[in-house]
Image (cartoon, rainbow over all chains, first blue to last red; front, side):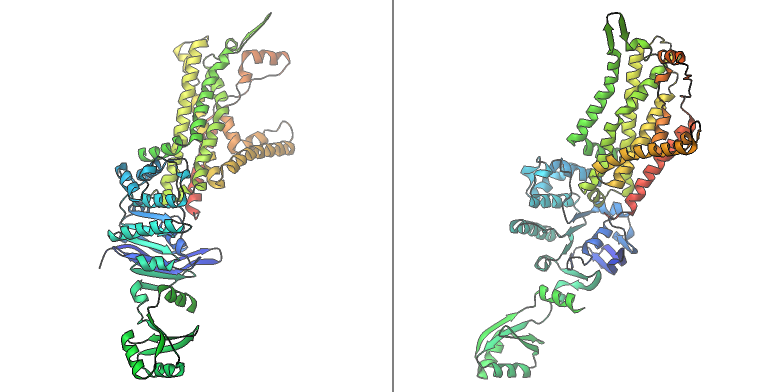
Length: 299
Length: 278
C-alpha cells in the first residue's frame, strides 16, 4: 500500500438548498496522477476548496497525510492552483513568489529555478498585472511548485487559455508527472485527463459515479465500424457471431461492439470467405469521452 | 510573528498607494510642529500661537494627541484597503491555500494595526517632546512627564479605531464601500445622539452616557477637546459668563470600553473569516 496523501470521507456541502457535494468519499495515494472529472457545476471545485481550507464543509471529514499535521501545515506541502491565478497585481513575478516562500516558510533561493521551469525567468521583474493569462497561469504553476510539493492540485488549469497556452501547460503537467509528483487535476476537458491521468474520480451533481483507474474505465474490447454493399448479409453474420455484442446503425455505418477480442484482419478474412466484401472497416477503442457521457447521462 | 510581519510589510511597502499614504501620514504628523510658526504681526496686533501656552508641558500632551488624531484617516484608508484588497485580488484565498491559517491571517493584520499605532504614538511623543522643550514655559522633568496618560489614550484610541477599520474591511470586502460605511457610521452615531437628546430633553446626562458605549464616541471620549483648557479661552469664557471647567481626564472605564470594542472587532473579523466560503 502506498502512502495516503488525502482522504475524503462522507463529505457534504450545501449552499442553501443546493447540495453541491453529496456524501463524497475518495482517497488520493502517493505517486498517482488523478483526474477529477465532471460537468460544470458537479462539485469539483467545491470539493477541492474544502480540502484546501477555503470552503467550509457542511458535514463529513477530510484528512491530509493521515492526519499527521494540521490542515494549514499540510497545505505548506501542497501546491495548488484554483481556477484563476491570484497574485498581487502591483508586485513583480519574483516578489509574488517571494511572498509565497515566506508564507510557506521556505528559502527564496529556488524561485529562479522554478521561474525558469515555466519559462518566465526573463520576465521575473515585470509586474504581475502586465502578464497575459497564459503567463499568469504559468506563474501560478511556478508558485505551486516552489516547495517541491507532495501533491500538485490543479483546478481547470487550461481554462480560458489559447491553444498555445493549453499546449504549454499540458507539456508542463506531463513533465511534472513524469518526475513522480502526485497530481490531482480537476477538469471537464476529457482528453486532458485521458492524456495525463492514471486514475479518475467522476462526479455528477455532487455524487461520485466512478472511482478507479482510467484504463479500466475505458477497458472495453473496442468496436468495429463496418459497411458493405450486402448490408443484410453483413448484419446477419454479425448477429450470429459470438464475439459481438450489441449492433446498431449510425450515420449509415454499422457499429458492432465487441465482447471478445477480435482483430480486424481476422474479421476481414472470415467475411471475405463468406462472400461479404466490406467497403468500410475500422476498429476503434471507446474514448473516455464516450464513457464519460454514458456514465454522466445514464444516472 | 516575525514571519507574519515580514509578509505584511512586503504586501504594504510594495504597494505604491499605501507607501504614499504612509509617507503622507507621517509628514502631516510632523507638520504639527508648523503650528509653532503661526504668527500674526499686523501693526498693533501681535500674535504668536506658540506663545499662547499651547506648547506648555503638560498641556502639550493633551493638545498634540488631540490634533494628531485627525490624521488617522490616512492610516484608516491603508488598513481598510490592506484587508479589502485581499478580497478583491482574491489573494486571501491564495494565501490560505499556500498554507497561512485563518488565525494567522487575522493576527498578521492585527499586528499591523499594533505596529501602526505604536509608530504613530512614538512619533507624536517625540514631536511633542521636542516642541515642548523648545517652547514650553516649564521644563522641569516632573512637569514634562506628567499627564502622559494622554499618550496612552492616543495609543488605545488608534488601536481601537484601526481595529474597527479592519473589521469593516473584512465585513464589506470593498475599500470604497468600507470607507463609506465608516463615515456613515459616524453619522449614525450623531443621529442616535440627536434622537436621544430629543427624547430625554436638555440637561439630561443619558444621551452622553449611552453614546459613550458606541465605538466612535467611546474613542473620542478618550481624548476630550483641549481648547477650553487654554487660559486665553477660559478668560474669554468667564467674561461672557460661561464656566468651562469640565472633565478632560482619561478615565479607566473609557479605556475599558475601547478595549472591549477592539476585542469584539478582531474576534468578529476572525469569526467572519471562519464562516465565509471564499
